[in-house]
Image 1 (cartoon, rainbow, N blue to C red):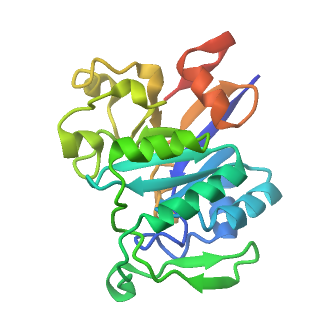
Image 2 (image 1 turned 90 degrees about the vertical axis):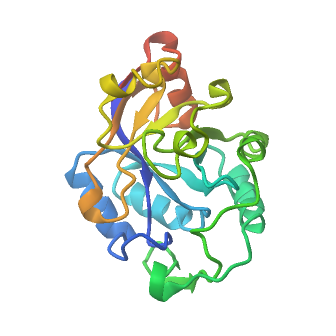
Length: 245
């Protein structure tokens, strides 16, 4: 086993609120400079850019996980991750069909760019990815599980679009694999607010939308290999696996 430095909440040029500077090569160069060796792309409500970014990550020797940041009907942000790419693609189709049929206002929110590994534009996504799915939290989690995915609420300490900001508490903590926290979260202080959560179930990430955001938050995992299944084993401390935030 070995230590991996991971940032598992990063946006690409597909997210309307993300910068066009977050192109695959520029992003991987930044990741490499920061000595981060494992990332996940988690765009809003779509995994359309995961294939391109995974290819470029591989060229840079950076481990890559497919992910997505879902906005549920309650306007809660959930992070879903998949080790199985075929399951991820099937899930992505269902997620897309669950989105409200609203058109993206590119002048206000920004373009939603789908690209290939050579940074050629494949298309501009016209459906508004910044809006909610019709799935509620329970249905979203069930759909993730049905596709062999892993799920955690994003940035639970944030004042907007977190499960706690929207509901006031976490109704069923056991339904989630882990819990995302913001880059600036003071874990010791925050634990006073959520004493029912184990520290080793918290995962810090940057939630980067721009290159300047990169490096603001990461988590270290002592695991056999960089896959989500291993992260779930760190939460329980199985066979010496460790997590450090």
